[in-house]
Length: 497
Ligand code: AMP
Ligand code: ZN
Image 1 (spheres, rainbow, N blue to C red):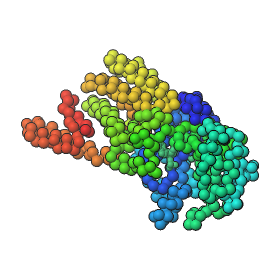
Image 2 (image 1 turned 90 degrees about the horizontal axis):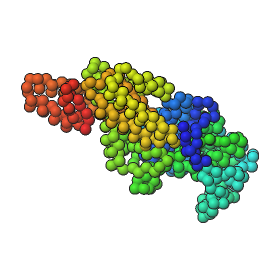
Image 3 (image 1 turned 30 degrees about the vertical axis):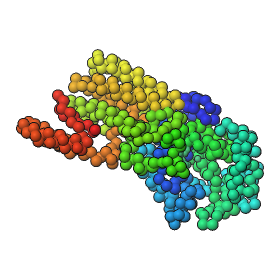
Image 4 (image 1 turned 90 degrees about the vertical axis):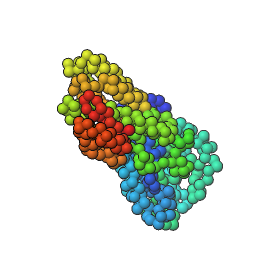
């Protein structure tokens, strides 16, 4: 598998520090409000990547923090007249609800910045002792960017360029800064702000120090993958490297993965521009599966424009897949096989073994064997695309192709083996992208399947009794509920419209 590494600007073969173990850290949100769907892009992309790594057999230690102390949190808490801690805890809970709505797996560890202050003080002490940091008159500690010769290596900028970019920026409270690119490691408290004791002054750490302490602590040293949105390359990630590497004499992270922005009208979605939709809002209108399908419909390093029209189009794509799967289940049910649960396989070796067996299955008809050959080509393409810098966009296309082949070949004469195989393949390929058709969301569970089945039964009985008016009335009632019926030789099929 190849992934694009921001550090080397190349696609590189993925090799882990420890065999078959992945240490992965993803910068999490600052919890001062509900998250917006721009924040959801790295969450969905890297959750899917994590799922794929697990599918490939890696044991993934996935760490993602919550930044629970920062100017925005303090300001918002003051506005609301509550403590920063109360505000942060509230929005951590809300963020976790949104993550569940998007089927994002909880991280192995979700560290909180405020619980790791001792480690941050230790790191800053180490940098001061080694001459990489200096203390200003008011107790502010600055990192000296001129001391780290490799400063700029991640963002591919040299110090002169970076300094000229900063020339006019004067930040109040940072008067003792020696060089414009130097950044704050520890800052003194202001009136009414939370603070911790330190050798330099009562205060709190800078943001860049937080991740740099939490990542190696919970990943057990250097990282295989450090990930986040592309706005974090500079200065956040550049500064993390600058703090870690001089103290440990080793690479901080081998692969740096950065997702491009989610835009609206070609402008980054952000709180400050006011052009955002919260995940909470979007999930009232669309299922989490639609949001995932939409987010993954573009490769993660390409800009993705958000619009409700595009979400509608992802919704239609999801419905096409759902209708195909429901049709397969319906056909199986008519053959006396009840498939209630997701039939996915969770490991690539099991999956490949099964596919190889099925290629020569004596249970398939000649036509099914031919159709299955085509499906195998799409499966191969699906994995080739994911192995090529996690190209989920082209991988999704292969699922649509498989659905097309299934639609062409599934009928009352299909063999049970073929139906089961198609179900398992579609379930498995979707599951890698975190899409579980069998996981009913609150929005969907409004569709009361038992009631629908009961109404269909009543309609069938009305038709038998030649009460066509009643039968039509039931059909219309169901349509008003968003359920369309189709009479087939095998019985009545229903689908959501
Ligand atoms: P923040 O809460 O601003 O620190 O952001 C949390 C994560 O969301 C970071 O990885 C950001 O890079 C990412 N992010 C924020 N806005 C967007 C956006 N519009 N598109 C993609 N990623 C974003
Ligand atoms: Zn971070």
